[in-house]
Image 1: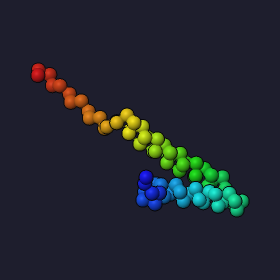
Image 2: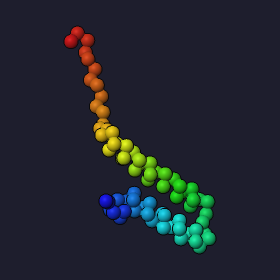
Image 3: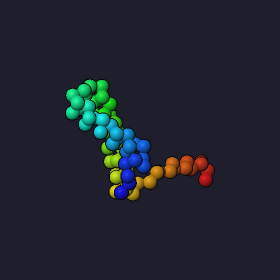
Image 4: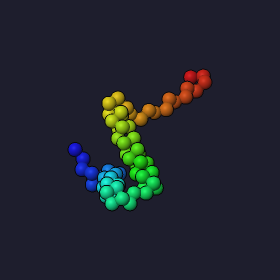
Length: 72
């Protein structure tokens, strides 16, 4: 399993979660931070879900179909 500090996206997610917990317990949570946290968490889990779906369906990048020239 990959460590959280080896990927910047994972590191930011973990750091934001720690900050969220600390701010909540200190009673200094702001609506702006809550919105920012929700956006980051949604992005993180969205990209994780996409990676999982690609693995499950063995999805590869599709190549465009070449156009057939007239007369061939």
